[in-house]
Image 1: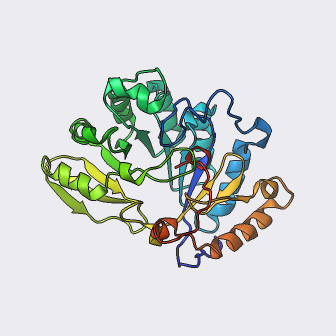
Image 2 (image 1 turned 90 degrees about the vertical axis):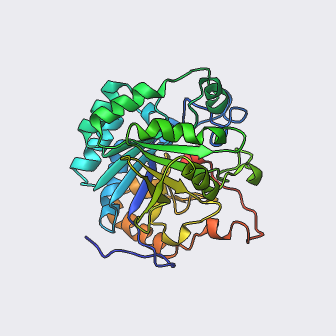
Length: 335
């Protein structure tokens, strides 16, 4: 292994989030609102999308300078064919320590879950924004109602723990927080509540719709005894165990409690752009490097240069900086 690298704020690189598609079968208002991502929206063409072989080659290079953990994202990653084969090679050939996937769950049949487990996937995170069947279509922008209980039961069959993400938005699903905990605690889930973030330009973000993690903890504490858990400093979530259960709750508080100081993540877009922050305006196009001769040395040198110059801390200065810059969409680089 080459020597590990640090950025300008002494943050290591250990974690890569890989977007394998910019397409999704949902139209969630905080990510891909239907009025913008409609039938006329132009997605990235197939010839510009990184192949699985190119993703594997990239990860093999980055492992030399610290890559330990990968999260497969999208769009909806299960729309990409044979995703289990990519996971298998990342685990068996590149030997990545931990590989996870974030999905809306709509394509998670029991057979798919079994294939993902057999491929070497370590965990599935289910995006779960409502339990109310009357709200599902208004939140995800589709007419398809989904019963999440069978999906949770099938995940539980094959994986040690279920993980869920819920973006909490005032007036939309904040009244369901206790319902989420009541259900998910039965599955011993790691429940994560995420503050509504100003990612991208399409979601019409409104600070007044943010529900702070502190207020959620206070609300949940009226029903459950929460005990703080010591977490790794690079974790985005501050965690509490739920006493007398095997569940925990994590709060991801980019708005009210930013965690930039310990961020060890980079993001790779579906078309081969490298991003050093979720709130970035643009990325570094490394596709030409990946597709060139002697790509290993070129990519290694380039990534070292990018990371050692990194100083991103958008969430820390969100309300201080007066400079407004456009931000890339979450569906493009994967939240």
